[in-house]
Image 1 (cartoon, one colour):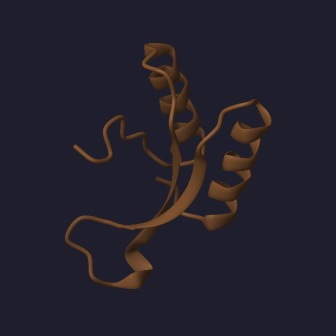
Image 2 (image 1 turned 135 degrees about the horizontal axis):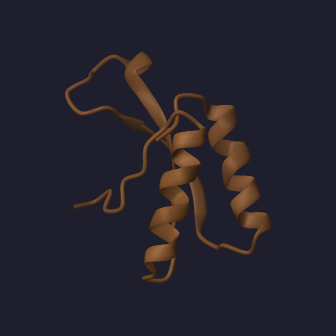
Length: 74
């Protein structure tokens, strides 16, 4: 999750340029928040089951003041 849409879109573009497919930017509400200002931007990426992706995405999220959710639907 990232606080700014421009950052999320830029990151998604970079990931697609690297050859990752099924990359999309969506707006997500924070748990328990009804205010639209509390919504963050998420970059969803479908990847193979490989722990290296988790390490990389955690680092990318930290650089962009966001966070990584390895199981967003769980």
